[in-house]
Length: 395
Image 1: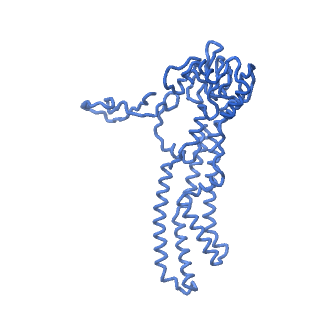
Image 2: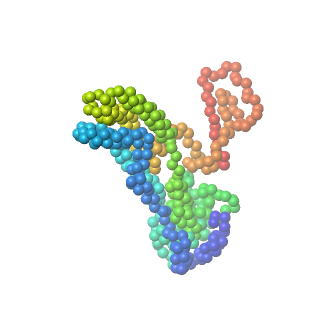
Image 3: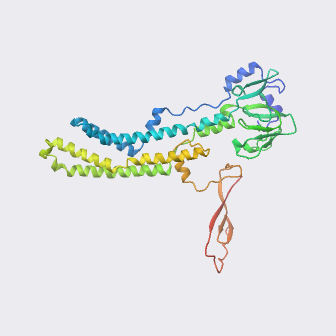
């Protein structure tokens, strides 16, 4: 719509700028597009979130060891003293799961936080009369008037200015620190990025100067803010370097511990018939329990709890600085980040990185040059610095 003339946009929605949509058109638009609101994100159910905390190899080994301990104690009719070891294991795992569930439940509100940026009311022209309506009732084709201080209810195309200029603060969307000038002229560029759409006011942005009559062209999830919400919700969840290393450690430990426990149990075969055990089967169960205790002792059961607690503390520290972390392992990924490339608006405009120049010692070369580098100085400096200057194409 940004490339079409204002008259063409009005014709596309069959709306008059001085009359607005009729009641029949509003009903048809509501059936077609739904309400102007971001879809809620209930998140995974609590039971799935709890099970997710136990989806770890070392945790599964500990659960198996605790279950075996309980079965042996129950089969032998042992007292409460035999339940201390499996009870401690289960208590540690429960504490670990509780920390993970609480942290991820709080962090899952990152998507819902976008709903707070939506406008609450809008001044809409319908049937020739201006009305103040809830912003969720704005439909594509509605004629909306914006004025200084008003929050734009949806993505709207500027159709008519009521003054010399119209300026909007769209920093929540683009990161631009200053207000942006808008007009009703059609864009000539074939593909315009968000920052260049000078005739579009985006939902959630705030008008800082001027008044204008606009036509709503995108509502709800079809708006720019809705696209951000969908991108966040559809974010693929891959394993972080720490998770991969912990998984590798779990596999190695599982193999070593299994081999040692089996070896200990087999080496104890001659002692199964010891009269102190009462029978050969009782002796086998006794040394099996010894092997299980050895496995429990060898597994660092406190490691998952320590890792989760550290990540939770990192999440809390980031939240105090206004950064909402949706997934707990993201804290570890951010901790591994050494360079963040961005432009003056704080965004990555092209997402294409290339070497433009290479600076070595006291000389500089353009990337891709086939010329031989200059001879080094006769008396090189004691301290040399090598760095690469990166540029973003299209920024």
